[in-house]
Amino acid sequence: MAITRGTVRSAGQAFTPDEMKAYNDMIRKWTSKVRLRIKSSSARFANGGSGKYVKALTPSIGSGTKMDYGIIDRVNIKFERHGVFVHKGVGRGYVMRSGNVIRVAYTPATPATKRRKPVDWFNAIIENNLPELANSVATFNADAVINEKRMFIR
Image (cartoon, one colour):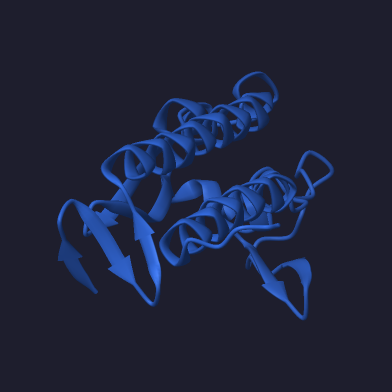
């Protein structure tokens, strides 16, 4: 990838500085929207969940982007580690084996012991919003190729 006269050139694609700003803004807007949806998805644990860790999950959710050559190429969503345990339904005597959550604690389960279940609070949101990002990125890149090659429909 070579930077020449204010444009980024890569495999026949060129972004002007204005196009790079629009592209980066589009990615940041998508990231912010998805982060808010994930936060609202995790908010259901604040009242119904037990323990300080589950209640602290929603405030811990954040997002960020990384860029190379002035264009965002990575998006990350950050949250506390226990969010993965909630997602899989495991922890403190419960493990996942063959796709099922089973109790492996040495103490027997009492009637007061809650059965843990996986809660898909994260992956479903990403899967539902990923096609929108893919279409936007494809459109930006297609427009850049057409602009670089100066293609016209006549």
